[in-house]
Length: 232
Image (cartoon, rainbow, N blue to C red; front, side, top):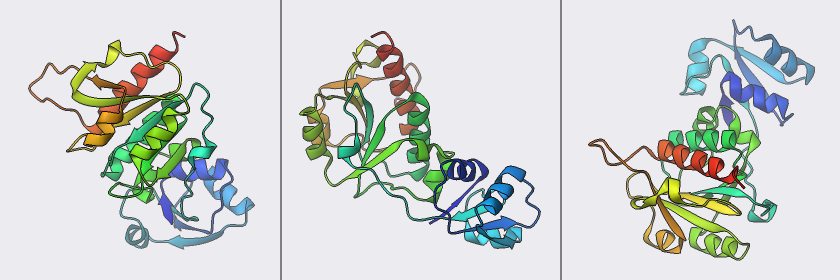
């Protein structure tokens, strides 16, 4: 897998993750990245900007790494100890996924759960948008969201879905083992997932636009949950 961007590369180097090789712009001058790669004896290939642009379609900032494919965590690796989780109900846009990962990591969310089918999965775009945050949060990929909800409910989790027709998100109790569910960009939460939620959180709208981008809505609810949980 090819990943790119200074922040992403710095996080990989700090975590001492495996790097197969590096492709670097001929005039790249970041001393920390260069010295770190050299100390680890990583094979470096110097390229022109055009050559790098052909390797990565996003803003690579002059540095691209070839790393092993992303490895997902499992439900068994979660602590279930006053945990805050985020479940994504078929988020399709990798930019939204990356942004939600970045927000969740910043808020201290333990893990993000996403389905393996009909959903954006971890790729170079997601990693770049997350600005490296993906290396500091557990990402769990499951076969069935509804089965996962039932498994986690037995562990004591409350599920809070997000929808336009629900209770004011500020009036919900987010304490204890809690999982916030963010629906698909266009369709929202699927019928069964919504039915399996214990509460439905709604963000009041005062403008003429009656919905928010999925990553923006996720950020608002996640940080309200953090504020609420700090009152424990």
